[in-house]
Image 1 (tube, rainbow, N blue to C red):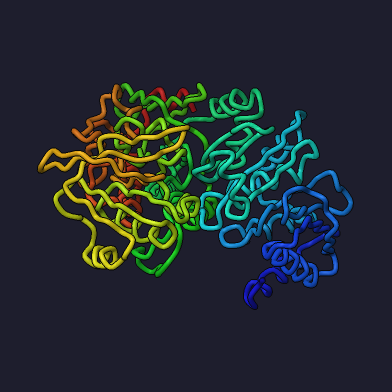
Image 2 (image 1 turned 90 degrees about the vertical axis):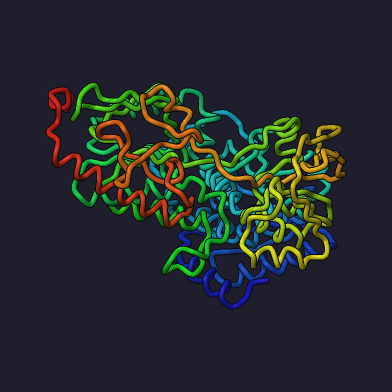
Length: 529
């Protein structure tokens, strides 16, 4: 099961084990069970502290429990093979069960250990889902730290009957005590915020007690990370308030156009940015959603950013880098069937549509790349572009046209997504030239039609926005408000690219530095400090 490279990597990691780990498998007579046995035997052979047995009686076969030998009440179960993107999750489960300390905020660990209710989590993942490992790893850690928490992590392709019976059409899909809990990526802090009563109030109290920052970055994507690094290096007290550190990177798979980095993946780059930010004295406040901006009353004064949990943060200068999100079509059926056939992440959810008919909406690079990727898995792809021609790069168009199971519809307007019994069963598309409409029978719709800037929270701030809702900036990243700068996809700067966002973030950081050294603090700053 493991190639030479993976075997050597795992052997190196297992050297960190501090106490015995038990692997207990429940197997059937199928090929996946045979592969599971082979995998567990290979793992057990790599270290004396790991043992494997095959006398488990769980109804899900194949599956296996990972537990610490000295504390069998704390366990996590993998149903199916955790390979692909989940191999790292498997490694971490082994290390944590073996007593290797997790690299997690101590306060979060104590919060997990202090939970007193019973929580039985079941979570479905696909091996190609780059958003799933965060959920898998968070639930794994919770189960191995608190005996009142169990986590069963299920590879959907192996348990397709369960996926169908539970109407799962998007991953990660998490159930709690048998009921739907959340569809989508969640990190440990987000899960705790949903299940731990009073955690939001505690977080708000902690944030509200912070002293004013010299630089407060709102947003934690490539632009926000770059600007924070620059201002921190200049010696200014810098904070980052991010609803989700990494931003759109978590929804991006292959990245091949970042100079100096031939290939990386979005979640990996997000992790590297977080580590880089952590190298400096930067106050990173994750899960902090900005809901209102109150500008300073005078030049050099304190700006106030109000957060969704009721807390407020103050700063002499602000850099707004809240990014953008996937644009919705806004047609009947889209919201109703979201995660029930309507999807936005082809890499995550594509495997759930194996052999089925799907549509991709959008003929730019994202849409065409999605169609090419999905065509390898699904039965048939219909790509629908509103314009009279595709807008993707020619090399991508050529690849798309070469695929036998792809139909391209240009000058087509999607007017409705239809469904029955809670699932998508088709869409209606109108020919914009003739006005004729037709219904296309299918089971999935992947929407790839661009981005919307995250600026709704700024509409009453006095900040100048463009007709598209983007923050208007000058060549130095300045906005119309003194001491307020902006960078990245949330601005009117053209070309929404990672490398552009990083550059714009760095420039905004340097502009904030220039502003701070040229403007003395207002009296209110001195009084608040």
